[in-house]
Structure formats: structure tokens, C-alpha cells
Image (cartoon, rainbow, N blue to C red; front, side, top):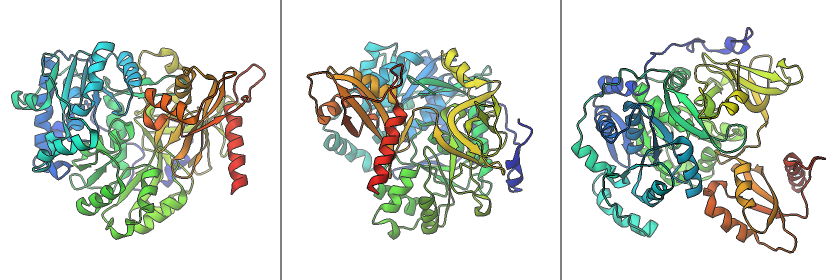
Length: 563
């Protein structure tokens, strides 16, 4: 820790500067929750509930089955599911079996999925019937050996489970037929046939890798962030400590943030298991549905992103719903506009504060306090318990003083072990125990931190992390593209919008629609550029490097002139 930590004097007496936790694997907290909260609801999903005991028993059944098909300690198992009971069961079952979870976005294209499966070396995938065709393709392209298939209807109450097949056919124009085999397994069969025996995994320790969380890191292709059991346990305990008014076994959490994103995984799933809270799972964000669920199910905790809160506030039906159950809302993934914070708090009576984190830190390192008197507008807040932070000055080659710009660096038990099979990238961001975040900011004299820019070129649009180089590499494959650079430009709703600046090959002509269709074949929808600008040339340095920042500055100047 640094000698000077001015933020500690602002901690309310209820939040300790240092906390402790049991040095045990994450999945053992589910066993403890099943013993302590037994028949209390752990999950609410579309009108059906699972108790903690039922959740634990189904987790043990799947864990036993995973070991029976060959999953050993350290083997990687991919989970490609939306927020549903199966996502929670699968996650804890993989850990229980000694495996490493590889969180996989269901929106991934074949290209993105193939890269992640090969890089992680995953041998088993747990997925939905709707995504089965994509998973089967991976068996021929990667080392994937087994696929476990489930359906949303497996956890729907009657009569929703009966009519789901017809809804699925109408909405997706398909009903997937699954052919069972020695390598393709049905979720329902597994739970009907397996026994909930506790596994003998005495060699599991807190220092073991629990998950590979794929992120772009600072540059280039996505990298697997190695997060240990202790990384995740410590960050979850910090989260519970920060919301000191919360009561064990008495809260309910709105689970809309996807669990394949580390933010949702920690602040919704792991927090709920550790503290005995009920998770109210929502697989897909639809404003009207979310408002209805809040009014009916009365969640008390609501982790989200700015775009989610903005969408709710802007819905014409917003004021018709009773949202007074909300106590704590932590906003992450992108900067939270002050006016959104103030309006949301006024309309709901709950507390909404901005936090900061990154995949490499499990993810949370900073947050504002929920008490209004020690918040600072525009700030990401102060470091969490057991967490140190500083601003590193390149000019000084050391710590910066108050209000001096530099790179935000953090240190704490939640900081990753490193990048999977990538020692060079690991060494570039982990130095003397400090994680160099790549974000530029400053700390004021009170120890509050502010982010002013990103050292990395990452774009954050609608809460998604998007890496320009990946999009550029796809567009460069188009036969008519000579040069391309992708940048994030300001967007009042999504935070940033992806824009591609394109120079075509001589004599060639192309339309926005043509490039859009090409990009959609190779990229998840949220990564596809929303705007294309065709140019004769691109600004470059003397050595030919394209000046991305200059294009962003031009865009900002253009916006200022129009307002």
C-alpha cells in the first residue's frame, strides 16, 4: 500500500479499511449458503423459483456428470448462456468439478467463438438449444469434445414451458432438434440421472484459477484474464462491505447485467450466493419488462450501466411504476452522467452511484459512497477496502501529486494472476504488484479519483467493451478496402458510437450497406460500426501511423459547431 491514502478519512464508520475472508474456493460459498438459507429462494426466473438447497443439489449433479465425462482439475469449460438458472448452476458446477470457467458471449460470431475456444483450450461447452448449431460447428474447428444442451423452457413454470416451443418457433423461425450422443448431452437427462454427491476436491485451493475472462486488455486480440478463486471472493466481499446497510439473506438483486461479463458475475451472481440474496434473473433487456419486474418482484439492489438507467428514465411509462424498493444501484462500464444520477435518485428514492473497474481486477476497484455528503460529482469515487490506487506519472517515472495527470494504477487481492498463456502482455501491465489500467486520470487532494481519457483505444458503447483493432482487421479483409481506422465518437445515449473511416482502393466503389453486411458476418452486432465515412486519405504521423486521436478531435469539433 502507498503511505498516503487520503481517501480513508472519508470512509463512514460502518465500512472498515481492511476486511478479511475465508481462504477457500468460491464454490464452497454455495454449500455454505445452502446450509444457512436452505429453503429460501436463491433464483427467481420468469415466475419460477429455486431455493438455495435446490440450486446446490443441481450444481452437485452437474459437477458429478462433468467429472464422469472427463473434466479434471484445471480443464476449461465454456459457458455460453444468457442469464438463466442454468448459467448459475453451470458456473458453480464447473468450479465444483475442479474446472476453469470460460465465460462466452452468446452473441459471438463463429469467428470470435473459434478464437476463444482455441485460445482457452476448452473441451466442454454448456449452451442453449438455440445456440446449438454454432456450438456443433466448434467441434469440427476446435478441441471441443462435449456439448451439454439446455433450453430456456427447462426452468419455466407451467404453462410457459408448454407454449415456449411455439413462441421460439415464431420468434426465431426455428426449432432446433438435438441428436443425443456420447458427445452431446441433454441437461434434463443429466439432472434426472445424476446424484447430488459432494465431490472430494480437497486439493482445490483459493489460489487456483477459477475463470478465464476474455478481454482486449490494453491492445490487440482478446486475452484470457486469469482470475483466481481468491480474486473473486475478495472482490465480492468488498462489494458486500460497501453496501453496509444490506442484510444477509434479506435482499434481492436485479440480475440484468450478463453473467458472461465480469461486472454482472461479481455484483449479481457471486454477491447473491455469498450473502444469501435472491437473484431476479432477466435474460434480455427490454425496458417495459424490467419496469414490470421491479414493481412486482421489488428488488433492493440494482447493478447496471448508464445506458440502462437512461433507457428506463426515458420510457414514457416510467412514472407509472413503483420503483421504491430500490436501495442501492451501482453504475459501471461507462461514465455516469450527473443529470442521470440525480434524476434517477429523485424518481426512485434509491441511491445511484458511479463505480470503476476492469476485468483484470475482478472487476471493481473504486466506487462513490452511497451517502450523499461524501460523494463527488464526476468522480469514480475512492478505492474499496484492501485496495490501493495511485496515479503514475510517465514524466516523473513515479507517483503523481494531486490533480496531476497520469495512468491509474491499482493494487489489491482482486488483481488478476495474469493473462492466459501470454507472459509478455502480463509483464506489460503487472509491475511490482501494481496493475497499470491504461486509463488516464488524476486524484484530488481528498483521494477521490477521476478518469479523463483512455490510454488504450478501447471504445465503450452501451456498456460493451469494443476493441478497434479487431474491427479494423475484419474490414481490412474486404476486397475494396485500402485503409481503415475505427474510433469511438461521442454518443448521448450509448456513451460512444463505433465509427469506421475508410479509404477505398483506387477505382473501387462501395456503400455503407455493403460494408455493414460484410462486418455483420464476422462480428457480434454491438461491434459493427454504426457510421462509415469514406475519405481520400487518413491523417498520419511522419512514419505512417494513422492518427486515430486526430479523427476523434475532428469529430468533437464538428459536434461543437452543430450545438
